[in-house]
Image (cartoon, rainbow, N blue to C red; front, side, top):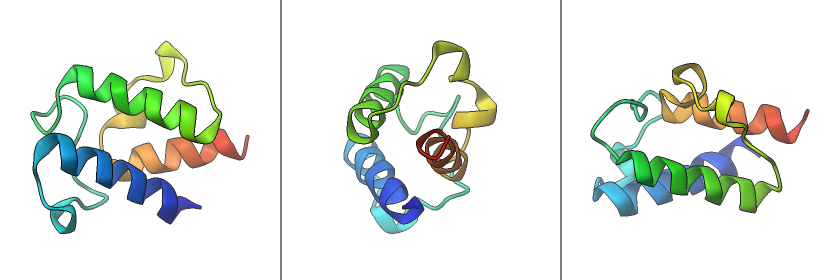
Length: 82
């Protein structure tokens, strides 16, 4: 499941940032970076919510959960299996 989540996130970020997918590793910083805009981050949240039928609460939009691609994957996987 985590690989599917990561693939979706990497695809989204690659399209928005024009960074090749192979360069988008789990430790790439997303939150508070110039990789994607804050609007794109909200679009990513909406995509994740729709794709996995979960709700991401505003208070969960923190650096702890969204700093790196890997932390986003872990957060989403945790919400799916909660």
